[in-house]
Length: 207
Image (tube, rainbow, N blue to C red; front, side, top):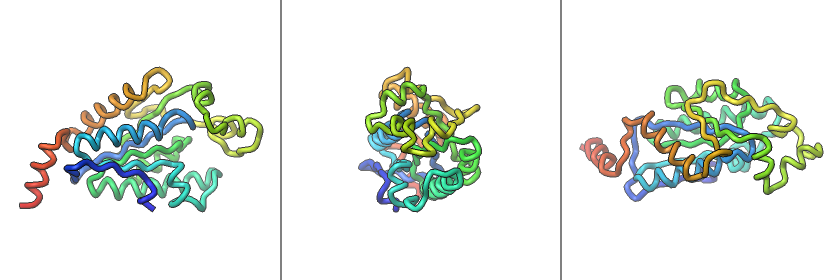
């Protein structure tokens, strides 16, 4: 199933004993998936391994048997959390883009992933997300054609104390990605920031 997610690797793929999991949460259309893939590309250019676990793609494979009831959403979060934890333990920086609308769902993810977990609130107002909705999902939800749709019939609880807030309603994609990259470097400075440090670490591990 992992092959159905997006993996970005640089020419000097660096593997670290400790790697972060960035859990991007927010409304549909807030920009979670866009930012996740853009961040992975930036990390790739810096020589790191990065895996994106996107909700839409995972529901085509790993969670294709799940719907959008509260019970199924909790199970989806559990599965994604377990995969993210495994990837992080192998040294890959893992970026999760998942609505995970309730605080209890995100707390569940934190418990599974542990101290590597960082919660990122991708902030955008409902009106902004609806304006971006090229697939017309919000319109379908408001017509009652999509039950259990977050932001319309399902409440989305903004994180009270996220590790980072990225406001896509006020900033460009590039500005948001830069903010995320700086956050990763500051929070997880021990994983290094350059290809040179990565190669040095790998040489030590090979001895």
